[in-house]
Image (tube, rainbow, N blue to C red; front, side, top):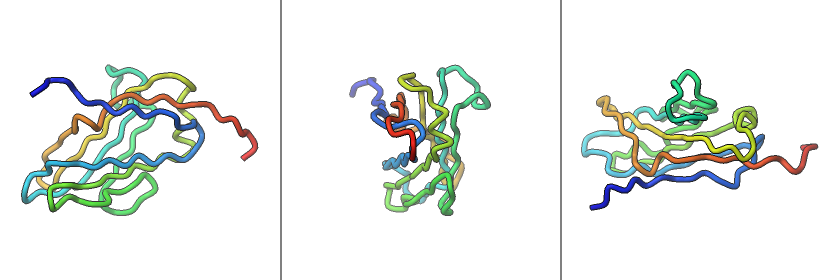
Amino acid sequence: MSDEKKETHIRNRVAGDNWTIRLTVVDIPVGQTLAQAWFTVKRNLDDLDSAAIVQKIITSAPAADGQIEDTGSDGTGVIKFTLAPEDTELFDHHVVYVWDAQVETNIGIINTPDYARGTLKAEPQITQSS
């Protein structure tokens, strides 16, 4: 088995647009479900969470920041984070940021899936009058 980490690179999205980040969470332990999830974007890996450019926290209740769409009682769940234009316009164009998504189960187990982390780079708007 390789020790290589799998990262997801978010690219070709435009700063100032609405973004939806949807991830499938696998290997949820039997008898557990997803209760909460976080999406965090930072300029530098070592930045404190309080210095995050964007941080979203979701549960299974529908909210502006997103929702746990499938809590994973069958071992696979789905989390959706919603970033509004005022969130994505905080990303400087062509700057590489780091991000991750963490999940917490109903019994308090916190995990960052290896595919739920990586880098993000936003593109500039072309149409300015929308």
